[in-house]
Image (cartoon, rainbow, N blue to C red):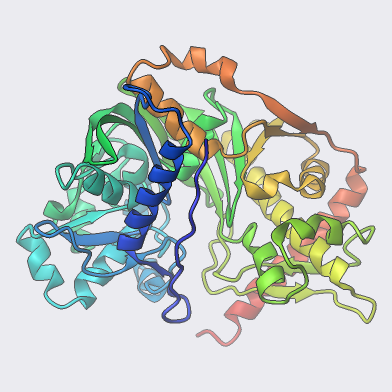
Amino acid sequence: TVAKKEFRQIFSQPGWVEHDPEEIWSSQVEVIEEALAKLPLTEGAVAAIGITNQRETTIVWERKTGRPIYNAIVWQDHRTAEYCDELKKTDLVTLVRDKTGLPIDSYFSATKIKWILDNVPNARERAELGELAFGTVDTWLIWNLTQQELHVTDVTNASRTMLFNIHTLEWDEELLTAFSIPRRMLPEVCSSSEIIGYTKIPLLASIPIGGIAGDQHAALFGQLCIKAGMVKNTYGTGCFLVMNTGSMPVKSKNNLITTIAWKINGQVTYALEGSIFIGGAVVQWLRDGLGLISQAGDIEQLAASVPDNGGVYIVPAFTGLGAPYWEPSARGSVFGITRGTSAGHFARAAVESIAFQTFDVLKSMEADVGTKIYELRVDGGAAANNLLMQFQADLLAIDVVRSSVIETTALGAAYLAGLAVGYWESVDELQTQWKQHRRFSAAMDEITSGNLYQGWLRAVKATIVWANLGKE
């Protein structure tokens, strides 16, 4: 059973993206009610709860009242980009990369926390007194589900803050000092699959909370990419490629993120990740910004109305370029328009931009691990687009395999929770759960796909040049 509810995005200034934490919580209460209403509930019908969430989104609230002191600052928010640019000129770059596996970027939580402490009246003083709590969305939900009893997160979410040492599995005092963040604000860090505590709200009384994982880690687990070398891509608003690298962290030489995939039964699994900021959001822009389609699902038919992109390339850097470029000042660009360019070409270029960005990251992953990737497991809303999936296979010259369950993020959280309470005995038992919906194999000749990709690289290069023109 599935229940969904949208909540507001708040754009108070250019480059700022916020959510209302109270609305996040109330929307979750509503979907819990709706989901439960669809089930024939008997005692013990809900074995456990798994939680998955947007990772770097930052919330700070009062411990005494549970009230947020500021809106949630969303992972896409760039208000601290200039501060990060200054930090990139210091030795902190190496320290952060070595300890956390992350580049210094406004994407992650640390500079968002610092911004709140520096800009909300009395926040820093109150944090140092232990009156304020920080959490990503998982922490905020568990705080509310347990009626303010538990202040916890898991290793995957902690690993995205720029404050957590992924080798020692502890909050790092040196980094906390560097970002001027009091240790007392931070949650306790748990594994991704264990009984963390029990719910205390009327809707869900005494249900074990058994799993926590950031959305992309949960999707990797939901796709059962449990062996080193397996890769998944989630095609959502952004796209997130994650590769299981096993029990050892791989230090990227190609601007990818080294992160924790999950921790189960005391064993840590690591991953490489490439984050693409604008994936399906480019289709939303064609719908809402340009009015070329009335609903997102129409994009496939419009893109298929032309045989190719007609030389048109869209670089959808609306909020900067993510991996492997990490160019936060880049902005969206369109190249190759002629008098003959149609709405179909725009649609085609938008769809292809998602696949091109995926190829950029996958090439970087192969270079980092030194092996060829032979299969890409895919999920997320845009994975339903057959034209996109076929073009992705053509471009990569490997099989692209769509899961029978598109919502693998939620599925991964459920698997982690189920393992914690013994609903499934082992990860091996879970292997039988994964089923293929459709496999896409490459059908385009390599010269054609190579030429298309070269055009993309030219467009990206021009976008970056434009972004840096006039900079001192």
